[in-house]
Image 1 (cartoon, rainbow, N blue to C red):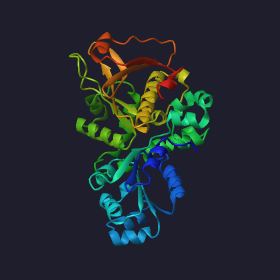
Image 2 (cartoon, one colour; image 1 turned 45 degrees about the vertical axis):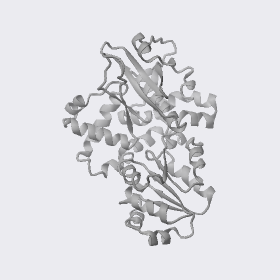
Image 3 (cartoon, rainbow, N blue to C red; image 1 turned 90 degrees about the horizontal axis):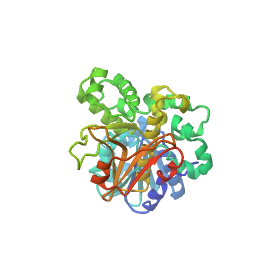
Image 4 (cartoon, helix red, strand yellow; image 1 turned 180 degrees about the vertical axis):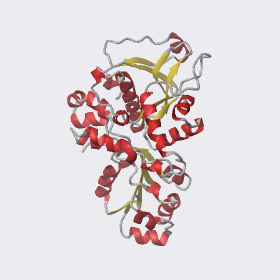
Amino acid sequence: MIERALREHIERHWADPKAIVVLGPRQVGKTTLLRQMCAEKGEYLYLNADDPGIVALLDGAGEARLRQIIGRNTILFIDEAQRVPNIGLTLKIVTDQIPGVKLIVTGSSALDLASEVNEPLTGRKWEYRLYPVAWSELTAHTGFAAAHTQLEQRLLFGMYPEVLNQTGDEEEVLAQLAGSYLYKDLLNFGGIRKPEVLDKLLLALALQTGSEVSYNELAQLLQIDRGTVEQYIGLLEKAYIVFRLPPLSRNLRNEIGSSRKIYFWDTGIRNAVLKDFKPLARRADTGAIWENFLISERLKRMEYRRIRGRAWFWRTYQQQEIDYVEEVQGEFAAYAFKWNPQAKTRFPEAFVSAYQPVDVGVVHREGFEGFLG
C-alpha cells in the first residue's frame, strides 16, 4: 500500500479533541487511509453515508441517540458525510457533548460538507485535502528509478490508486471513474439543471488544457448562458475534478488580469474525458499534458507540506508568458514547462524586473523531480 503524505499531519493532531475532516475527490483513498488509522488507534465505529439507512439513522440525531449509536467506541468515522442533512450540527453535538470520542469525517465534495461544517465546527476541527497519489508518494513507494520508468504511463493514465493497482486495465478503470461516478455528488446537487451539459463542458475544458479559457466562448459553444458556465465550473472545482489558475496582474499595466486557465487534478481523468490514450510520441497535446501534470503535482506538494502560497500564470497583451508563478511569503518563483529537454526559454525581462523572482527555471522531463520536491 502506498504511504500517503497526509498521514503524518493527521497523526499529529489525532490525540487532541478536535475533529479530523478530510475532503477530496472520490476514489483517492480517503476511506482506506482513515480506516487503517482508526484500526490502529482503538475501537471505532464506521458509518458510510452513501447508505440511505445510515443517513436516516444520523438525520436529526440528538445527543441521546448519538450516544446509543456510538456505544463504547472511542472513534466515530462518518464517511461521505455530505449526504447527511444538517451534518454540521450533528458533528457539533459529538465534539461538544460526547467527550472522549474522536470524530473522523470525510467528504468527496465541498458542495455541501464544507459549508455545513465550517460554522458549527469553527475552532473544533482540523481540515485536510487528499488528492490522487502524488509523484513524491509514488517515488517513496517504488523507488526513484522505478517511478521514473513509468512517467509516460502516469501522464497518460494518471495517479488514482485504483489505476495504479490495476496495470493493464487502466482505460477501463478510468472510463468508470470519468463517468458519472466521479461527480455523482454534482448530479444530486439542486443547482444542476442540465446534467447533460457537464459532459460537454468537461470535454471542452479537456481540449483547452493549458490555454486561457473564455467563459463567453464556452457559453456559445455549449449554447448556455455565461452564468451557467461559471456556476458549473465552480461546481466541478468543488468536486475536485478541475481547478482554476488565475493570471498574475499586479505591477505592470499591460498584464492580462481577467483571464484564467483550467486544469484537471488528474491527467488520466482528462485523457479519459477525451477518450484518448495514445502514446505521447503520437500526440499533439503532450505539452499540455506535461503542464497539467506538473502544476497539479506542485499544488499537491504545497498542500501536503502545508506551504501557504499562491499560484498563477503570467501573460501580457504582447504575448509574453510564463506557465507558472508561485508566491510564498512574499517571494516569487517562475517556471516554464517543456517536455523536450533541449527546449530553451528566456524569461521576460519585464517580469523579472517587476517581481524579482528568487528562482526561475525550465522544467522538462529530465530533472523535473526537484520541482516536485
